[in-house]
Length: 202
Image 1 (tube, helix red, strand yellow):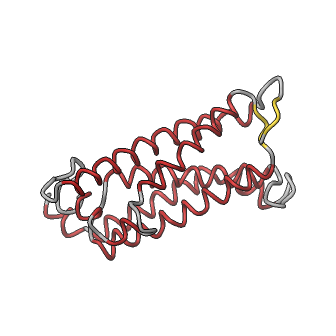
Image 2 (cartoon, one colour; image 1 turned 90 degrees about the horizontal axis):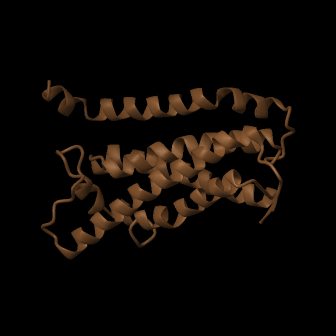
């Protein structure tokens, strides 16, 4: 999977830290969500700790069909996938040079995760009508993971583009704005969808 260099590449260190810390946060959120889901399955009267009000309600989300897209609770995917992200960050910090096929696999994973998050955002807002706080933590982790891994792979030529290509330099320069713009879009959609509830609290 990898070969080891005497020293790590300084430009890779911020990404490695992001993968390690982001993966840990995502893993904790997915694990908490899975625990809450199990408790709800054991006791139909159980009120999840992340059910705060009619909008921020894990219970409503957990009991929806969308919460088990592949026939099992969605958090199982996060519990299985985030350790890979953590291990990748840890390996990079230890000086590993990961092979191109590995980066392609990670790219496929973060791209699938981003598409899944986009679908979940739509379903939560316009089909279920509720938000899950733990789910939103996972969204907040996946979005920067997708953009930063994609920018890294483009600049390293993993995606078939030269290191000095327009796509590579554009993604490198616009990583942070792309993350911020994605976050802003989600926040605006949430505010617009539940504005009547938010305004009633004022």
